[in-house]
Amino acid sequence: MNSGPTTTGLQDNDVIADIGSACLLMRARLISRVVERIYDEELRAFGFGSAQFALLVAIHQMAPATRADIGRFMHLDRSTLTRHLKVLLSEGWAEEINEGADGRSRPVALTTDGLVLLQKAVPAWQAAQKKADTLLGNDSVMGITNRIISSGRMIKQFLSDIPLAGPAQADDGPRLLAGVRSTEIA
Image 1 (cartoon, rainbow, N blue to C red):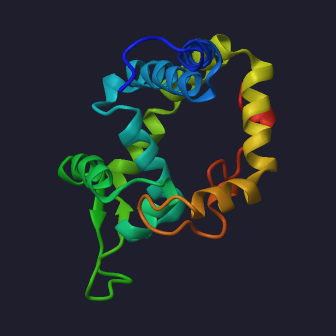
Image 2 (image 1 turned 45 degrees about the horizontal axis):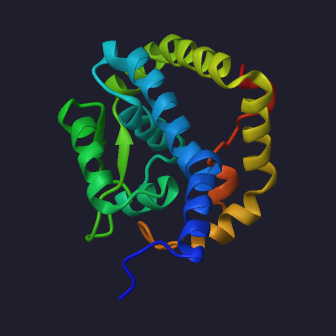
């Protein structure tokens, strides 16, 4: 067993230093946490965070939808989806409905209270959007948004190779930003 530094070891340290300063994964995770915190702070007054807000929006877009459909759409594993959905159900913002139930699962839809809450949260969402836009810069936000929209097929293929909550749906990539135009990001 080799216990001392080697030429390869020194080269590995250089690569590791490069990873620390240029790794897309590390940068994306940092940006994600910071942006999520912005939304969490703005939405806190409504009794939920960014994860529940995103789930409310997804349910509104898809309703009625089964838990499996929502999990695939949001690319969430079952336990994460259940944890966030439990809050929505217990607060009365969403409900399981009998319409479309197949015996194995019951679809989920927003309640009137959930829709009203979502509508009331729009100004907080807009404030969070503005803060995130200021932090990242309008060009960056528009670039990221346009890249996601334009590369929907690439994202769909990539996501289909990653089994998180089930196989990706054929239109997951474009649906991530369904109805959002780059001019609406500001």
